[in-house]
Image (cartoon, each protein chain N blue to C red):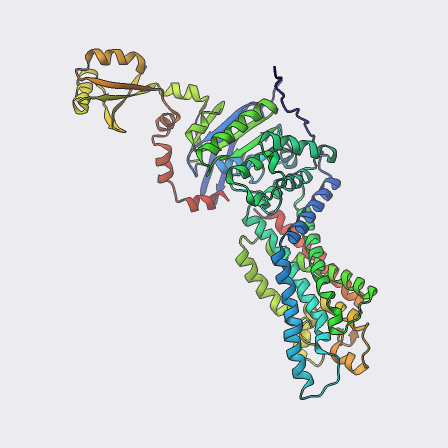
Length: 290
Length: 323
Protein backbone atom coordinates (compact mmCIF):
# COMPACT_ATOMS: atom_id res chain seq x y z
CA UNK A 1 0.00 0.00 0.00
CA UNK A 2 1.31 3.38 -0.85
CA UNK A 3 0.85 6.50 1.13
CA UNK A 4 0.12 9.56 -0.91
CA UNK A 5 2.75 12.13 -0.21
CA UNK A 6 1.58 15.64 -0.57
CA UNK A 7 4.51 18.03 -0.95
CA UNK A 8 4.94 19.77 2.37
CA UNK A 9 4.47 23.45 1.85
CA UNK A 10 7.00 25.62 3.54
CA UNK A 11 5.10 28.85 3.45
CA UNK A 12 7.53 31.69 3.25
CA UNK A 13 6.85 35.03 4.75
CA UNK A 14 7.91 38.02 2.76
CA UNK A 15 9.29 40.72 5.06
CA UNK A 16 8.15 44.30 5.12
CA UNK A 17 9.97 46.52 2.73
CA UNK A 18 13.14 48.08 4.00
CA UNK A 19 16.61 49.19 2.97
CA UNK A 20 17.98 45.67 3.29
CA UNK A 21 15.34 44.34 0.97
CA UNK A 22 16.03 47.09 -1.57
CA UNK A 23 19.74 46.31 -1.37
CA UNK A 24 19.03 42.66 -2.16
CA UNK A 25 17.11 43.84 -5.19
CA UNK A 26 20.01 46.07 -6.30
CA UNK A 27 22.39 43.15 -5.93
CA UNK A 28 20.31 40.68 -7.90
CA UNK A 29 19.69 43.15 -10.75
CA UNK A 30 23.47 43.73 -10.85
CA UNK A 31 24.11 40.00 -10.74
CA UNK A 32 21.79 39.43 -13.67
CA UNK A 33 23.54 42.10 -15.75
CA UNK A 34 26.86 40.34 -15.24
CA UNK A 35 25.45 36.88 -15.94
CA UNK A 36 23.89 38.14 -19.14
CA UNK A 37 27.10 39.88 -20.20
CA UNK A 38 29.16 36.73 -19.64
CA UNK A 39 26.56 34.60 -21.44
CA UNK A 40 26.70 36.77 -24.56
CA UNK A 41 30.00 35.74 -26.15
CA UNK A 42 29.24 37.43 -29.47
CA UNK A 43 28.80 40.75 -27.74
CA UNK A 44 32.09 40.39 -25.87
CA UNK A 45 33.94 39.54 -29.08
CA UNK A 46 32.47 42.37 -31.18
CA UNK A 47 32.91 44.84 -28.35
CA UNK A 48 36.57 43.81 -28.18
CA UNK A 49 37.23 43.79 -31.91
CA UNK A 50 35.79 47.24 -32.51
CA UNK A 51 38.31 49.15 -30.36
CA UNK A 52 41.14 47.04 -31.74
CA UNK A 53 40.09 48.15 -35.20
CA UNK A 54 40.11 51.79 -34.08
CA UNK A 55 43.46 51.46 -32.41
CA UNK A 56 45.42 49.45 -34.95
CA UNK A 57 43.78 50.36 -38.24
CA UNK A 58 42.62 53.94 -37.79
CA UNK A 59 45.39 54.74 -35.30
CA UNK A 60 48.08 53.33 -37.57
CA UNK A 61 46.65 55.17 -40.58
CA UNK A 62 46.47 58.56 -38.93
CA UNK A 63 49.81 57.95 -37.27
CA UNK A 64 51.43 57.35 -40.67
CA UNK A 65 49.91 60.59 -41.96
CA UNK A 66 51.30 62.57 -39.06
CA UNK A 67 54.81 61.16 -38.90
CA UNK A 68 55.40 60.87 -42.65
CA UNK A 69 55.67 64.29 -44.29
CA UNK A 70 56.00 66.24 -41.06
CA UNK A 71 58.74 63.98 -39.73
CA UNK A 72 57.45 64.44 -36.20
CA UNK A 73 59.40 62.52 -33.60
CA UNK A 74 56.56 62.51 -31.05
CA UNK A 75 55.05 59.45 -29.42
CA UNK A 76 53.30 56.84 -31.52
CA UNK A 77 49.86 58.17 -32.45
CA UNK A 78 48.42 54.88 -31.25
CA UNK A 79 49.81 55.64 -27.80
CA UNK A 80 47.89 58.91 -27.88
CA UNK A 81 44.77 57.11 -29.01
CA UNK A 82 45.07 54.36 -26.42
CA UNK A 83 43.18 56.14 -23.59
CA UNK A 84 40.66 57.39 -26.15
CA UNK A 85 40.01 53.90 -27.38
CA UNK A 86 39.64 52.66 -23.81
CA UNK A 87 37.02 55.37 -23.26
CA UNK A 88 35.21 54.50 -26.47
CA UNK A 89 35.03 50.89 -25.45
CA UNK A 90 33.77 51.83 -21.99
CA UNK A 91 31.21 54.27 -23.41
CA UNK A 92 29.82 51.80 -25.93
CA UNK A 93 29.58 48.96 -23.43
CA UNK A 94 27.96 51.20 -20.83
CA UNK A 95 25.40 52.47 -23.34
CA UNK A 96 24.64 48.93 -24.43
CA UNK A 97 24.05 47.92 -20.82
CA UNK A 98 21.71 50.86 -20.30
CA UNK A 99 19.82 49.71 -23.39
CA UNK A 100 19.02 46.46 -21.61
CA UNK A 101 16.17 48.33 -19.88
CA UNK A 102 14.54 48.84 -23.27
CA UNK A 103 15.31 45.23 -24.11
CA UNK A 104 13.71 44.04 -20.86
CA UNK A 105 10.67 46.15 -21.62
CA UNK A 106 10.34 44.72 -25.12
CA UNK A 107 10.72 41.14 -23.93
CA UNK A 108 8.47 41.54 -20.92
CA UNK A 109 10.99 40.94 -18.16
CA UNK A 110 10.76 44.54 -16.99
CA UNK A 111 7.23 43.84 -15.76
CA UNK A 112 8.55 41.14 -13.48
CA UNK A 113 10.77 43.80 -11.89
CA UNK A 114 8.14 46.54 -11.88
CA UNK A 115 5.58 44.56 -9.90
CA UNK A 116 8.03 43.48 -7.22
CA UNK A 117 7.53 45.14 -3.82
CA UNK A 118 10.71 47.20 -4.11
CA UNK A 119 11.48 50.78 -5.02
CA UNK A 120 11.99 51.32 -8.72
CA UNK A 121 15.11 53.29 -7.94
CA UNK A 122 16.82 50.13 -6.73
CA UNK A 123 16.25 48.60 -10.16
CA UNK A 124 18.02 51.58 -11.74
CA UNK A 125 20.88 51.55 -9.24
CA UNK A 126 21.37 47.86 -9.95
CA UNK A 127 21.38 48.53 -13.70
CA UNK A 128 23.89 51.39 -13.38
CA UNK A 129 26.27 49.44 -11.13
CA UNK A 130 25.93 46.43 -13.40
CA UNK A 131 26.58 48.50 -16.51
CA UNK A 132 29.57 50.16 -14.85
CA UNK A 133 31.08 46.85 -13.80
CA UNK A 134 30.56 45.24 -17.19
CA UNK A 135 32.02 48.27 -19.00
CA UNK A 136 35.03 48.25 -16.67
CA UNK A 137 35.64 44.58 -17.43
CA UNK A 138 35.39 45.34 -21.13
CA UNK A 139 37.75 48.30 -20.71
CA UNK A 140 40.27 46.10 -18.94
CA UNK A 141 40.38 43.89 -22.03
CA UNK A 142 41.68 46.92 -23.96
CA UNK A 143 44.01 47.89 -21.11
CA UNK A 144 45.54 44.44 -21.51
CA UNK A 145 46.79 45.54 -24.95
CA UNK A 146 48.91 48.33 -23.39
CA UNK A 147 52.21 46.64 -24.27
CA UNK A 148 51.43 46.78 -27.99
CA UNK A 149 51.35 50.58 -27.93
CA UNK A 150 54.36 51.09 -25.63
CA UNK A 151 52.37 51.75 -22.46
CA UNK A 152 53.98 50.00 -19.46
CA UNK A 153 52.03 47.43 -17.44
CA UNK A 154 52.19 49.13 -14.09
CA UNK A 155 49.87 47.77 -11.38
CA UNK A 156 49.24 51.31 -10.15
CA UNK A 157 48.30 52.46 -13.66
CA UNK A 158 45.94 49.53 -14.13
CA UNK A 159 44.25 50.16 -10.79
CA UNK A 160 43.91 53.88 -11.49
CA UNK A 161 42.45 53.17 -14.92
CA UNK A 162 40.02 50.60 -13.52
CA UNK A 163 38.72 53.03 -10.90
CA UNK A 164 38.42 55.87 -13.41
CA UNK A 165 36.74 53.63 -15.96
CA UNK A 166 34.23 52.52 -13.33
CA UNK A 167 33.31 56.10 -12.45
CA UNK A 168 33.01 57.14 -16.08
CA UNK A 169 31.03 54.01 -16.93
CA UNK A 170 28.62 54.58 -14.04
CA UNK A 171 27.85 58.09 -15.26
CA UNK A 172 27.48 57.02 -18.87
CA UNK A 173 25.20 54.15 -17.90
CA UNK A 174 23.14 56.59 -15.83
CA UNK A 175 22.86 58.80 -18.91
CA UNK A 176 21.85 55.83 -21.04
CA UNK A 177 19.33 54.73 -18.43
CA UNK A 178 17.86 58.22 -18.36
CA UNK A 179 17.32 57.96 -22.10
CA UNK A 180 16.11 54.35 -21.88
CA UNK A 181 13.44 54.56 -19.16
CA UNK A 182 10.76 55.97 -21.40
CA UNK A 183 11.74 54.37 -24.70
CA UNK A 184 9.73 51.40 -25.89
CA UNK A 185 11.89 49.83 -28.55
CA UNK A 186 15.51 49.07 -29.25
CA UNK A 187 15.73 50.83 -32.64
CA UNK A 188 14.63 54.13 -31.17
CA UNK A 189 17.07 53.75 -28.33
CA UNK A 190 20.02 53.14 -30.61
CA UNK A 191 18.93 56.01 -32.83
CA UNK A 192 18.98 58.38 -29.89
CA UNK A 193 22.24 56.98 -28.56
CA UNK A 194 23.93 57.33 -31.92
CA UNK A 195 22.77 60.93 -32.20
CA UNK A 196 23.89 61.81 -28.69
CA UNK A 197 27.06 59.81 -28.32
CA UNK A 198 28.84 60.39 -31.65
CA UNK A 199 29.22 64.16 -31.28
CA UNK A 200 30.08 63.80 -27.62
CA UNK A 201 32.72 61.25 -28.48
CA UNK A 202 34.26 63.46 -31.19
CA UNK A 203 34.37 66.43 -28.82
CA UNK A 204 35.81 64.52 -25.89
CA UNK A 205 39.45 64.25 -26.87
CA UNK A 206 39.09 60.50 -27.42
CA UNK A 207 39.83 60.75 -31.14
CA UNK A 208 42.06 63.83 -31.51
CA UNK A 209 44.07 65.96 -29.06
CA UNK A 210 42.26 68.99 -27.72
CA UNK A 211 45.29 71.24 -28.09
CA UNK A 212 45.41 74.08 -30.64
CA UNK A 213 41.70 73.93 -31.36
CA UNK A 214 39.80 76.97 -32.61
CA UNK A 215 38.13 78.65 -29.65
CA UNK A 216 34.51 77.67 -30.56
CA UNK A 217 35.51 74.01 -30.63
CA UNK A 218 37.47 74.43 -27.46
CA UNK A 219 34.40 75.82 -25.69
CA UNK A 220 32.29 72.88 -26.89
CA UNK A 221 34.86 70.36 -25.67
CA UNK A 222 34.97 71.87 -22.21
CA UNK A 223 31.16 71.83 -22.04
CA UNK A 224 31.10 68.15 -23.03
CA UNK A 225 30.76 65.91 -19.97
CA UNK A 226 32.57 63.06 -21.72
CA UNK A 227 35.71 65.22 -21.87
CA UNK A 228 35.97 64.86 -18.11
CA UNK A 229 35.62 61.12 -18.40
CA UNK A 230 38.36 60.79 -21.04
CA UNK A 231 40.95 63.24 -19.66
CA UNK A 232 41.64 61.43 -16.35
CA UNK A 233 42.36 58.25 -18.31
CA UNK A 234 44.77 60.10 -20.57
CA UNK A 235 46.48 61.83 -17.67
CA UNK A 236 46.96 58.46 -16.00
CA UNK A 237 48.43 56.84 -19.11
CA UNK A 238 50.68 59.81 -19.96
CA UNK A 239 52.06 60.03 -16.44
CA UNK A 240 53.64 56.64 -17.12
CA UNK A 241 55.31 57.70 -20.39
CA UNK A 242 58.58 59.55 -20.91
CA UNK A 243 57.77 62.56 -23.04
CA UNK A 244 59.31 65.96 -23.59
CA UNK A 245 57.27 68.90 -22.22
CA UNK A 246 56.47 69.96 -25.79
CA UNK A 247 55.08 66.55 -26.67
CA UNK A 248 53.06 66.45 -23.47
CA UNK A 249 51.58 69.83 -24.26
CA UNK A 250 50.64 68.67 -27.73
CA UNK A 251 49.11 65.30 -26.87
CA UNK A 252 48.05 65.73 -23.29
CA UNK A 253 46.98 69.34 -22.85
CA UNK A 254 44.51 68.60 -20.07
CA UNK A 255 41.41 70.71 -19.65
CA UNK A 256 41.50 74.36 -18.73
CA UNK A 257 38.69 76.72 -17.85
CA UNK A 258 39.89 80.12 -19.03
CA UNK A 259 43.42 79.82 -17.71
CA UNK A 260 42.82 77.43 -14.86
CA UNK A 261 44.07 73.87 -15.41
CA UNK A 262 41.29 71.63 -14.05
CA UNK A 263 42.89 69.02 -11.77
CA UNK A 264 42.03 65.34 -12.26
CA UNK A 265 40.41 65.22 -8.82
CA UNK A 266 37.96 67.95 -9.79
CA UNK A 267 37.22 66.19 -13.07
CA UNK A 268 36.44 62.94 -11.28
CA UNK A 269 34.29 64.85 -8.82
CA UNK A 270 32.37 66.40 -11.71
CA UNK A 271 31.84 63.04 -13.33
CA UNK A 272 30.59 61.46 -10.12
CA UNK A 273 28.26 64.36 -9.43
CA UNK A 274 26.93 64.17 -12.99
CA UNK A 275 26.34 60.43 -12.53
CA UNK A 276 24.31 60.93 -9.38
CA UNK A 277 22.26 63.76 -10.87
CA UNK A 278 21.53 61.73 -14.01
CA UNK A 279 20.53 58.74 -11.91
CA UNK A 280 18.24 60.91 -9.83
CA UNK A 281 16.48 62.35 -12.88
CA UNK A 282 16.20 58.88 -14.38
CA UNK A 283 14.66 57.60 -11.13
CA UNK A 284 12.07 60.37 -11.13
CA UNK A 285 11.19 59.69 -14.75
CA UNK A 286 11.08 55.96 -14.12
CA UNK A 287 8.77 56.33 -11.15
CA UNK A 288 6.29 58.17 -13.33
CA UNK A 289 6.60 55.80 -16.29
CA UNK A 290 3.74 53.44 -17.19
CA UNK B 1 -14.12 35.49 10.24
CA UNK B 2 -13.04 35.51 6.66
CA UNK B 3 -12.42 38.74 4.89
CA UNK B 4 -12.81 38.68 1.14
CA UNK B 5 -9.58 38.01 -0.76
CA UNK B 6 -10.54 40.73 -3.22
CA UNK B 7 -13.19 43.42 -2.74
CA UNK B 8 -13.91 45.86 -5.55
CA UNK B 9 -16.21 48.89 -5.52
CA UNK B 10 -17.00 51.00 -8.53
CA UNK B 11 -13.60 50.42 -10.09
CA UNK B 12 -13.20 52.57 -13.20
CA UNK B 13 -10.39 53.22 -15.63
CA UNK B 14 -10.39 55.64 -18.50
CA UNK B 15 -7.61 56.16 -21.00
CA UNK B 16 -8.17 59.52 -22.59
CA UNK B 17 -11.70 59.27 -23.93
CA UNK B 18 -11.85 55.50 -23.83
CA UNK B 19 -13.62 54.03 -20.84
CA UNK B 20 -11.91 50.66 -20.51
CA UNK B 21 -13.56 49.67 -17.23
CA UNK B 22 -16.86 51.30 -16.30
CA UNK B 23 -17.37 50.88 -12.57
CA UNK B 24 -17.21 47.21 -11.65
CA UNK B 25 -18.17 45.76 -8.25
CA UNK B 26 -17.44 42.25 -6.99
CA UNK B 27 -15.96 40.23 -4.17
CA UNK B 28 -13.78 37.16 -4.29
CA UNK B 29 -13.85 34.79 -1.31
CA UNK B 30 -10.66 33.23 0.07
CA UNK B 31 -9.80 29.93 -1.58
CA UNK B 32 -11.98 30.57 -4.58
CA UNK B 33 -11.09 30.29 -8.25
CA UNK B 34 -12.73 33.36 -9.68
CA UNK B 35 -12.88 33.93 -13.41
CA UNK B 36 -13.33 37.00 -15.54
CA UNK B 37 -14.83 35.86 -18.81
CA UNK B 38 -15.15 38.15 -21.77
CA UNK B 39 -13.91 38.92 -25.26
CA UNK B 40 -10.58 40.61 -25.87
CA UNK B 41 -10.86 44.31 -25.13
CA UNK B 42 -13.70 43.87 -22.62
CA UNK B 43 -11.59 45.36 -19.84
CA UNK B 44 -10.24 42.17 -18.26
CA UNK B 45 -6.55 43.03 -18.44
CA UNK B 46 -7.17 46.61 -17.36
CA UNK B 47 -9.00 45.34 -14.26
CA UNK B 48 -6.18 42.92 -13.47
CA UNK B 49 -3.60 45.68 -13.93
CA UNK B 50 -5.44 47.87 -11.45
CA UNK B 51 -5.77 45.07 -8.90
CA UNK B 52 -2.04 44.33 -9.27
CA UNK B 53 -1.19 48.02 -8.71
CA UNK B 54 0.22 48.36 -12.21
CA UNK B 55 -2.43 50.88 -13.21
CA UNK B 56 -4.11 53.50 -11.05
CA UNK B 57 -7.89 53.43 -11.04
CA UNK B 58 -9.56 56.59 -12.36
CA UNK B 59 -12.32 56.11 -9.80
CA UNK B 60 -13.51 53.55 -7.31
CA UNK B 61 -11.52 51.46 -4.88
CA UNK B 62 -10.40 47.91 -4.24
CA UNK B 63 -8.61 45.84 -1.65
CA UNK B 64 -6.55 42.76 -2.36
CA UNK B 65 -5.66 40.48 0.58
CA UNK B 66 -7.06 43.21 2.79
CA UNK B 67 -4.85 46.00 1.46
CA UNK B 68 -5.89 49.02 -0.54
CA UNK B 69 -4.53 48.90 -4.08
CA UNK B 70 -3.67 52.60 -4.17
CA UNK B 71 -2.62 53.46 -0.62
CA UNK B 72 -0.92 50.18 0.29
CA UNK B 73 0.73 49.31 -2.98
CA UNK B 74 3.72 47.47 -1.57
CA UNK B 75 1.57 45.47 0.84
CA UNK B 76 -0.60 44.37 -2.06
CA UNK B 77 2.45 43.46 -4.12
CA UNK B 78 3.91 41.31 -1.37
CA UNK B 79 0.71 39.32 -1.16
CA UNK B 80 0.03 38.63 -4.82
CA UNK B 81 1.56 36.43 -7.46
CA UNK B 82 1.24 37.33 -11.12
CA UNK B 83 1.25 35.37 -14.32
CA UNK B 84 1.01 37.72 -17.24
CA UNK B 85 -0.52 37.21 -20.61
CA UNK B 86 2.82 37.94 -22.31
CA UNK B 87 5.95 36.09 -21.47
CA UNK B 88 8.04 37.67 -18.70
CA UNK B 89 10.78 35.15 -18.03
CA UNK B 90 14.40 35.81 -18.99
CA UNK B 91 15.33 33.35 -21.72
CA UNK B 92 19.05 33.86 -21.20
CA UNK B 93 18.87 32.63 -17.62
CA UNK B 94 18.16 29.13 -16.36
CA UNK B 95 14.83 28.27 -14.78
CA UNK B 96 16.46 28.26 -11.37
CA UNK B 97 18.11 31.65 -11.91
CA UNK B 98 14.76 33.12 -12.93
CA UNK B 99 13.30 31.85 -9.67
CA UNK B 100 16.28 33.03 -7.60
CA UNK B 101 15.94 36.48 -9.15
CA UNK B 102 12.32 36.53 -8.10
CA UNK B 103 13.12 35.34 -4.57
CA UNK B 104 15.62 38.18 -4.15
CA UNK B 105 13.25 40.76 -5.59
CA UNK B 106 10.55 39.68 -3.15
CA UNK B 107 12.90 39.37 -0.19
CA UNK B 108 12.19 35.68 0.40
CA UNK B 109 14.31 34.70 3.42
CA UNK B 110 17.59 33.23 2.17
CA UNK B 111 17.30 30.13 4.34
CA UNK B 112 13.93 29.28 2.77
CA UNK B 113 14.76 30.07 -0.86
CA UNK B 114 16.27 26.74 -1.93
CA UNK B 115 13.43 24.68 -0.40
CA UNK B 116 10.78 26.87 -1.83
CA UNK B 117 12.29 26.77 -5.33
CA UNK B 118 12.36 22.99 -5.09
CA UNK B 119 8.69 22.93 -4.11
CA UNK B 120 7.36 25.22 -6.77
CA UNK B 121 9.33 23.36 -9.43
CA UNK B 122 7.70 20.17 -8.17
CA UNK B 123 4.25 21.68 -8.37
CA UNK B 124 4.66 22.51 -12.06
CA UNK B 125 6.76 19.44 -12.86
CA UNK B 126 9.87 21.23 -14.03
CA UNK B 127 12.34 19.81 -11.52
CA UNK B 128 14.44 18.08 -14.19
CA UNK B 129 14.74 21.27 -16.25
CA UNK B 130 15.83 23.57 -13.44
CA UNK B 131 19.32 24.21 -14.80
CA UNK B 132 18.31 24.57 -18.44
CA UNK B 133 18.19 27.94 -20.10
CA UNK B 134 14.62 29.11 -20.43
CA UNK B 135 15.04 29.93 -24.15
CA UNK B 136 15.12 26.18 -24.78
CA UNK B 137 11.66 25.76 -23.18
CA UNK B 138 8.40 25.25 -25.07
CA UNK B 139 5.58 27.75 -24.64
CA UNK B 140 3.81 25.51 -22.15
CA UNK B 141 6.95 24.99 -20.07
CA UNK B 142 7.58 28.73 -19.93
CA UNK B 143 4.05 29.27 -18.73
CA UNK B 144 4.51 26.62 -16.07
CA UNK B 145 7.71 28.29 -14.95
CA UNK B 146 5.86 31.59 -14.70
CA UNK B 147 3.22 29.94 -12.54
CA UNK B 148 5.96 28.49 -10.33
CA UNK B 149 7.53 31.91 -10.07
CA UNK B 150 4.21 33.53 -9.22
CA UNK B 151 3.87 31.08 -6.32
CA UNK B 152 7.42 31.38 -5.03
CA UNK B 153 6.79 34.01 -2.38
CA UNK B 154 3.62 32.28 -1.08
CA UNK B 155 1.15 34.88 -2.29
CA UNK B 156 -2.36 34.92 -0.86
CA UNK B 157 -3.86 35.73 -4.24
CA UNK B 158 -2.58 34.48 -7.58
CA UNK B 159 -3.54 36.46 -10.68
CA UNK B 160 -3.54 34.60 -13.94
CA UNK B 161 -4.09 36.78 -16.99
CA UNK B 162 -5.17 34.47 -19.82
CA UNK B 163 -2.95 31.69 -18.46
CA UNK B 164 -3.39 29.38 -21.43
CA UNK B 165 -3.65 31.76 -24.35
CA UNK B 166 -1.58 30.65 -27.33
CA UNK B 167 -1.09 27.12 -26.01
CA UNK B 168 -2.27 23.95 -27.70
CA UNK B 169 -5.28 22.13 -26.15
CA UNK B 170 -3.15 19.42 -24.57
CA UNK B 171 -0.85 21.89 -22.87
CA UNK B 172 -3.87 23.89 -21.83
CA UNK B 173 -5.37 20.87 -20.11
CA UNK B 174 -2.02 20.21 -18.41
CA UNK B 175 -1.84 23.78 -17.11
CA UNK B 176 -5.32 23.36 -15.68
CA UNK B 177 -4.18 20.18 -14.03
CA UNK B 178 -1.46 22.17 -12.28
CA UNK B 179 -3.83 24.93 -11.27
CA UNK B 180 -6.24 22.46 -9.69
CA UNK B 181 -3.36 20.67 -7.93
CA UNK B 182 -2.25 23.98 -6.63
CA UNK B 183 -5.49 24.62 -4.93
CA UNK B 184 -5.18 21.36 -3.05
CA UNK B 185 -1.71 22.16 -1.77
CA UNK B 186 -1.62 25.86 -1.26
CA UNK B 187 -3.89 28.07 0.70
CA UNK B 188 -4.52 30.43 -2.15
CA UNK B 189 -7.17 32.39 -3.99
CA UNK B 190 -7.00 32.47 -7.77
CA UNK B 191 -8.25 35.31 -9.92
CA UNK B 192 -8.07 34.63 -13.61
CA UNK B 193 -9.19 36.05 -16.90
CA UNK B 194 -10.00 34.06 -19.96
CA UNK B 195 -11.88 34.24 -23.18
CA UNK B 196 -12.10 30.48 -23.50
CA UNK B 197 -15.52 29.19 -22.47
CA UNK B 198 -14.19 25.73 -21.63
CA UNK B 199 -11.83 27.26 -19.12
CA UNK B 200 -14.41 29.31 -17.34
CA UNK B 201 -16.04 25.99 -16.43
CA UNK B 202 -13.16 25.27 -14.04
CA UNK B 203 -13.91 28.37 -12.00
CA UNK B 204 -15.99 28.38 -8.83
CA UNK B 205 -17.64 31.59 -9.92
CA UNK B 206 -17.38 33.66 -13.04
CA UNK B 207 -18.13 37.23 -13.92
CA UNK B 208 -19.04 37.83 -17.52
CA UNK B 209 -17.58 41.13 -18.58
CA UNK B 210 -18.47 42.94 -21.77
CA UNK B 211 -17.52 46.46 -22.85
CA UNK B 212 -16.12 47.37 -19.45
CA UNK B 213 -19.11 46.20 -17.40
CA UNK B 214 -19.91 43.07 -15.43
CA UNK B 215 -23.00 41.69 -17.10
CA UNK B 216 -23.62 38.83 -14.70
CA UNK B 217 -21.76 37.05 -11.91
CA UNK B 218 -22.46 33.56 -10.53
CA UNK B 219 -21.36 29.95 -10.51
CA UNK B 220 -21.11 28.35 -13.97
CA UNK B 221 -23.95 25.93 -13.06
CA UNK B 222 -26.34 28.67 -11.95
CA UNK B 223 -25.52 30.72 -15.00
CA UNK B 224 -26.20 27.84 -17.30
CA UNK B 225 -29.43 27.01 -15.47
CA UNK B 226 -30.51 30.62 -15.79
CA UNK B 227 -30.45 30.33 -19.55
CA UNK B 228 -33.19 27.76 -19.01
CA UNK B 229 -33.26 26.09 -22.37
CA UNK B 230 -31.45 22.98 -23.50
CA UNK B 231 -30.21 22.53 -26.99
CA UNK B 232 -31.75 19.64 -28.91
CA UNK B 233 -30.27 18.28 -32.11
CA UNK B 234 -31.97 15.75 -34.33
CA UNK B 235 -30.88 13.56 -37.15
CA UNK B 236 -33.91 12.65 -39.28
CA UNK B 237 -34.67 11.12 -42.67
CA UNK B 238 -36.30 14.37 -43.83
CA UNK B 239 -34.91 17.44 -42.11
CA UNK B 240 -37.01 19.97 -44.03
CA UNK B 241 -40.22 18.20 -43.10
CA UNK B 242 -39.07 17.92 -39.49
CA UNK B 243 -38.56 21.66 -39.29
CA UNK B 244 -42.00 22.35 -40.69
CA UNK B 245 -43.64 19.89 -38.33
CA UNK B 246 -41.79 21.29 -35.30
CA UNK B 247 -43.21 24.68 -36.19
CA UNK B 248 -46.75 23.40 -36.74
CA UNK B 249 -47.06 21.04 -33.79
CA UNK B 250 -44.90 22.63 -31.12
CA UNK B 251 -44.46 26.19 -32.25
CA UNK B 252 -40.70 25.71 -32.22
CA UNK B 253 -38.33 27.55 -34.53
CA UNK B 254 -35.68 25.06 -35.63
CA UNK B 255 -32.82 25.43 -38.05
CA UNK B 256 -30.06 23.34 -39.52
CA UNK B 257 -26.78 23.74 -37.57
CA UNK B 258 -23.80 21.47 -37.99
CA UNK B 259 -25.88 19.36 -40.38
CA UNK B 260 -28.62 18.67 -37.84
CA UNK B 261 -32.01 20.06 -36.97
CA UNK B 262 -31.29 22.24 -33.97
CA UNK B 263 -33.58 24.05 -31.55
CA UNK B 264 -33.73 25.23 -27.96
CA UNK B 265 -36.35 24.06 -25.53
CA UNK B 266 -36.91 24.10 -21.78
CA UNK B 267 -36.14 20.74 -20.08
CA UNK B 268 -35.02 18.91 -23.19
CA UNK B 269 -35.10 15.40 -21.69
CA UNK B 270 -38.82 15.64 -20.97
CA UNK B 271 -39.47 16.96 -24.43
CA UNK B 272 -37.86 14.04 -26.24
CA UNK B 273 -40.68 11.46 -25.59
CA UNK B 274 -43.26 13.91 -26.94
CA UNK B 275 -41.10 14.41 -29.94
CA UNK B 276 -41.08 10.70 -30.73
CA UNK B 277 -44.81 10.47 -30.21
CA UNK B 278 -45.86 13.44 -32.30
CA UNK B 279 -43.21 14.11 -34.89
CA UNK B 280 -44.20 12.08 -37.96
CA UNK B 281 -40.70 11.89 -39.35
CA UNK B 282 -38.36 9.01 -38.65
CA UNK B 283 -35.75 10.17 -36.16
CA UNK B 284 -32.34 8.55 -36.44
CA UNK B 285 -30.70 10.14 -33.42
CA UNK B 286 -31.34 12.73 -30.75
CA UNK B 287 -28.87 14.74 -28.78
CA UNK B 288 -29.87 16.90 -25.85
CA UNK B 289 -27.25 19.29 -24.52
CA UNK B 290 -27.29 21.40 -21.38
CA UNK B 291 -26.70 25.06 -22.07
CA UNK B 292 -23.01 25.85 -22.35
CA UNK B 293 -21.35 29.04 -21.22
CA UNK B 294 -21.46 30.02 -24.87
CA UNK B 295 -25.24 30.07 -24.59
CA UNK B 296 -24.93 31.98 -21.32
CA UNK B 297 -22.71 34.59 -22.89
CA UNK B 298 -25.07 34.82 -25.84
CA UNK B 299 -28.15 35.25 -23.70
CA UNK B 300 -26.61 37.99 -21.51
CA UNK B 301 -24.75 40.00 -24.13
CA UNK B 302 -26.76 39.26 -27.23
CA UNK B 303 -23.77 38.03 -29.19
CA UNK B 304 -21.34 35.14 -29.11
CA UNK B 305 -17.92 35.80 -27.66
CA UNK B 306 -16.39 35.42 -31.12
CA UNK B 307 -18.81 37.92 -32.62
CA UNK B 308 -18.00 40.31 -29.78
CA UNK B 309 -14.33 40.01 -30.62
CA UNK B 310 -14.79 40.47 -34.32
CA UNK B 311 -17.03 43.49 -33.77
CA UNK B 312 -14.71 45.39 -31.45
CA UNK B 313 -11.68 47.42 -32.57
CA UNK B 314 -8.66 45.73 -34.09
CA UNK B 315 -6.36 43.71 -31.92
CA UNK B 316 -3.49 46.12 -32.12
CA UNK B 317 -5.67 49.00 -30.99
CA UNK B 318 -6.81 46.99 -28.03
CA UNK B 319 -3.23 46.08 -27.30
CA UNK B 320 -2.41 49.77 -27.18
CA UNK B 321 -5.30 50.58 -24.89
CA UNK B 322 -4.23 47.80 -22.59
CA UNK B 323 -0.90 49.52 -21.98
